[in-house]
Image (cartoon, rainbow, N blue to C red):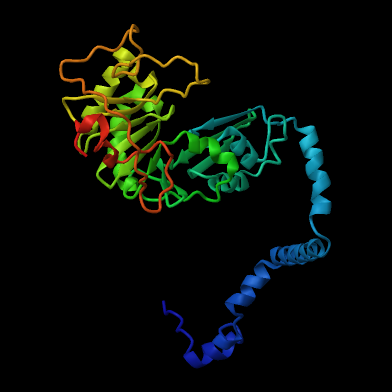
Length: 357
């Protein structure tokens, strides 16, 4: 059987018509046109939303948001009973509670939703002695404040100025400290004199080990950048030896526990010699009238005869009492120290010259 022959290319092209006509690439639609055609509905919705949003933003910019949002916020706060029930403060040693609550700007019973945590944290960071502050709030109504303080180590009096210093003697910024922070100042020891800022750490560390002496001390003065003189609350001056302050303070602590030496009416306690304790009693008060009886001789502890006196330890030798002499006036240049501070030179004539200057 004879197969039918395939039509020639000429006949196939002629009979096929437009069925096999090839289109040009330029006649095809672009990808952007196809995308717009497929997402025509979504793009129309986005366009309408953008126009409405722009109109709302322009309206609020012209008329403000406080008048519109304020009543809604007040209504929400009134309907939701979320109020501050407690404020807990952690890490505050020198910062007063009143200053902290004032910086927070909120109290117990105030609405929780109106509390600006960021603004409160910034105000707390501006307080004196505050290095960093964190503020958190709980749905239970609790506000937690944690302070990291950079407290001064001491107060340095120099040339009439009181400067908070750290342990290394560097000034601590007070961040605009006011009179309300005076209570924090009173908790810090006072050191006076040229070079006292950098030498205070060693002395104050030794004082921390002698609590009785520290409780009686009100200031410490560095004399000629060599040795310290302590001024007690009753005006007594305690002369410490050079480069041997811890040993002298330990000795004084023992004397206080045994004989209440720091509570007796003495003017000077000299500890500069390791084997001798020298005490100068306070001058006797002037008689009221010329007929007043003259006080009897007193012993080296300033007690009248017949009254009990502190026994002398084995390493302490009594020194004959000499007539009082006029004390030379001496202060460090530029320093304004209390009148009870004394210099080494005043011992040149004390106790009959028994102690070196």
